[in-house]
Image (cartoon, rainbow, N blue to C red; front, side, top):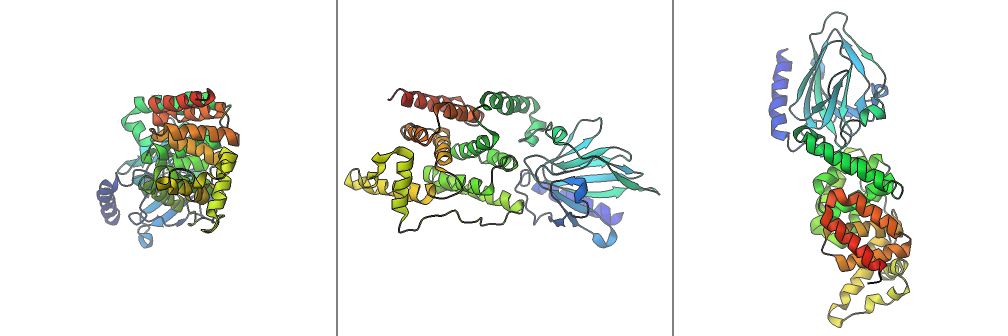
Length: 394
């Protein structure tokens, strides 16, 4: 018991230091080890979990890591009390008949014997908790029950689970609007896969790094592939610059790596330094029409090099890559420009580009409507005004 008491005291001390650092998915596994994939109990979990015994020789506490959306089945500890100490990330403890408890760094839960319950990560965050058993009586056992269904699990808040505790009324209204009313409005024009791609591009455009971290795991769960995510971030460089893209690239790498996805991903590059200008011009023509054939050598002599860079760098280095087709590349560019604001001339040009590749007015209005909760009304209305201008031929 003295060993356990000492370990728990250390847990709480280190947890307090790292609470803010580990609030989201970017868990530092050097602080609390991730351990090995939990294969022994995998049949009682939805998603991947990992076990790292902290005092294995003496049967001491175990650090359990849950990936986003991972949770164990409903279960009961007979004749014993389980203690959970959340040390990183965000998750849930749910006891039958009681309100869910948010697990965040520093939260300790003592689970009564005979209580039916489950625990796991939030939808948008990894979670680690240390666990040990106490008040163990003779004949103690663990009874595994039915899985926690998606319907049960999805009733819990998605992103911003931490804010749901500190700002419950605010987050209730935001979630009801962003993921209820807005989604209902656009669902006939915008499937979930495209909607989440547009979310990610929009958050890059408005520099919403915290919200990007929250939504990326959810986007992956909705079928957005790691390749698609990387292509969104890469292409953003042409419209936002490395100074604004780097934090998103780092966050993407952290989250993908934490999910066990090996980096670098397979190459999507199709051009060389020698043919990128010609390939870029072909992509420009595909987006904007035959007038772009000689665009790279047009304009005043003192700035003509920028038009060449648009062909070889912006389009030749990014639009020629596989992973996203031209329709999706023009759509995410529309999101980049609308979200950052101040780019109305370029936005109008890419609205025309979207039309040229087959993304119609109704789709673009659905996209800006879907993105409104993340960029606000002024930039949404500016983007809508640009659409109206292009429609009017102005």
